[in-house]
Amino acid sequence: MADKKGTTMDQEQLKKRLEMLDKRLDNIDSVVTALVERVMRQPVTIEVTCPKCNSVVQALLTSSIKSGSKTQAAH
Image 1 (cartoon, rainbow, N blue to C red):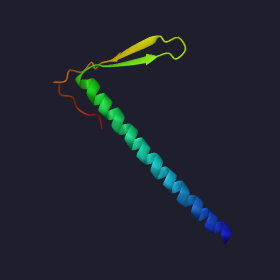
Image 2: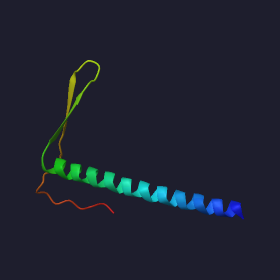
Image 3: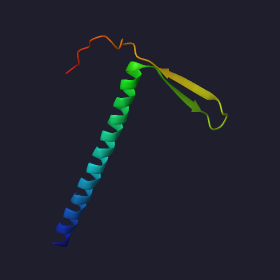
């Protein structure tokens, strides 16, 4: 009977961890969506500095879709 109780506790812990992972993925999705929406409106520049040589690398993200154009969402 102790085995069954331990299994139930393991299942509850797994369920909680999956719920936490789901929330984290939802948060990541929200951040990525906001970034993509911003890139669609205006360019975004990302700068990364190398910790060893202090060189700065810049990446410019832009959209090839005009903001006024109508697009149909894929299903």
